[in-house]
Length: 217
Image (cartoon, rainbow, N blue to C red):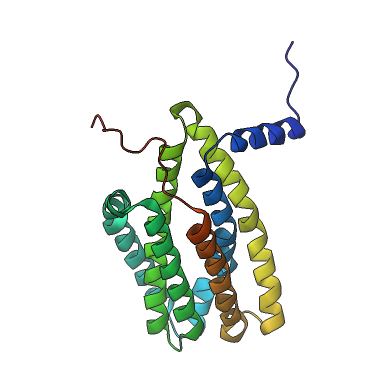
């Protein structure tokens, strides 16, 4: 009769799985930690921030639709771009755009200016969503891809869990749920993206284990 696995056994299995994987997969997980933390530090307060800059509920609806259009348009070109110039360059480009987006949010004096930052943020989101599965597909064996993506998502969940709590604490400290209280979070967000950028710049190499093979389709 098989014994049920405890939490310790599951975590031990994760470590064994990670240890036998190639460097790009593990470096990408390290990159996800500061990047996901930075993203979720301000994500749920974005509409409040835009409202404090003068945006109406109708404008927020239009901006949400605009982001959807941008995501749809960029879905296919993103994959093609990663194939042409390499995953590493695409990730670095994504993080650079993220830092620009956070900076524009931080200095925005009107909702129109913040709209530009929101559009840039939408671009980085769709690119990142496309690139992560490409890394798993290039590194992991076919029978391990679901496991690898699950472990990556689970580990990346922890900074997403604590970021809103820290964000709320900082907003209270800086002045409340308004423009003055939320704005400093975007400067902290730049730091998080910068840390992720440095991790990729210094440690990440384009996956090679399953690259170069001709696709059947």
